[in-house]
Amino acid sequence: MDSLVIAGKAFRSRLIVGTGKYKSFQETARALEASGAEMVTVAVRRVNLDRSKESLLDFIDPKKYFLLPNTAGCYTAEDAVRTARLGREVGLSDWVKVEVIGDEKTLYPDVQATIEATRTLVKEGFTVLPYTSDDIVVAKRLIDAGASAIMPLGAPIGSGMGIQNAANIRILREMIEVPLIVDAGVGTASDAAIAMELGADAVLMNTGIAHAQDPVLMAEAMRDAVRAGRAAYLAGRMPKKLYATASSPVEGVVSS
Image (cartoon, rainbow, N blue to C red; front, side):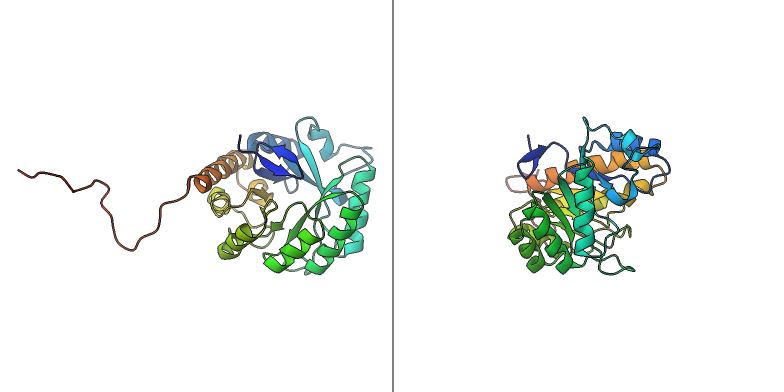
């Protein structure tokens, strides 16, 4: 089976789905089911951790889904580290998607703070998956800091613009050995397929599903697109050529 393996843990699905921005917890649950995802992200700062009232966590079966807490909403390394620790203390997971925002308008990551937070959390025993830019130098420094995967954006968070940096994604694929997960920018199924065809090991998305007119149907489309893109990458596309080539050979054909 062509599994996604991160830090020694295998996943059958290469689609990772976020749990924010849906109209209701019930819609979230239906979309997760339709996506076929096994790993789902949960913003530590946006869930009711004391479970005193209805919470997103009531709609996510921990026996079915692997929770990946994230540090969304953090703007410093220290804040991200505190948030990750809180998620672990309340029993969410010792895995964490580290997200440290550097610019409020574009939501681009503060890569230096991300590296600092990654280094600290890895020393504390966390499995860290950092959201980052598509810079190969930054990616290598994150790996040196102990990151178990690299999660570059394909376009700004929530933009739905699709993969805007295909060349950089290809460079990252060729030059890093840890899993490469495209995170942010996917708007529709073809974007997910393109990310996988470029060699991404997985795609993480939230808005592309949650803000679709029919989130559940879009979740199904994203599931199939990720599978198709992975198969196409493994199969190897035909070379591109400037001129046409006949589909049926003409050599050896006898005309009457």
